[in-house]
Image (cartoon, rainbow, N blue to C red):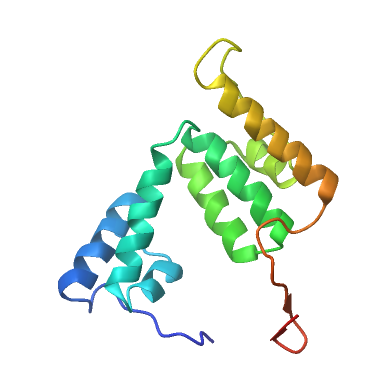
Length: 152
């Protein structure tokens, strides 16, 4: 059972409805994370703006999702892993590429070494190597103790 209430996209009105409709259009569905953020339209609007800004970077969508899958796996976040695997499929990742990302390996075509994307690809490969070597959670500074639900 969710501890936070979500907004039903069909019942949403005004700004909430506009934002949730945009998510539906982009993803083909409205995941619970977006329904929850819609409690505060400013939060959802800010998150969507951040996502658009990051999408304008040098890493292509497939590579971004491979990195997100690897990070979700390292963080042991099943929600993130499921979401980024689904998004990866939408942007063209094969099941083998998604599985390789879970093992912290990049698969698939990479740009030639003299192309503008080659530096970004090298950074992505370096990040994957670091993830493999560390074996630790990479984005959580604070760990959640599952048994007692307290921060440590």
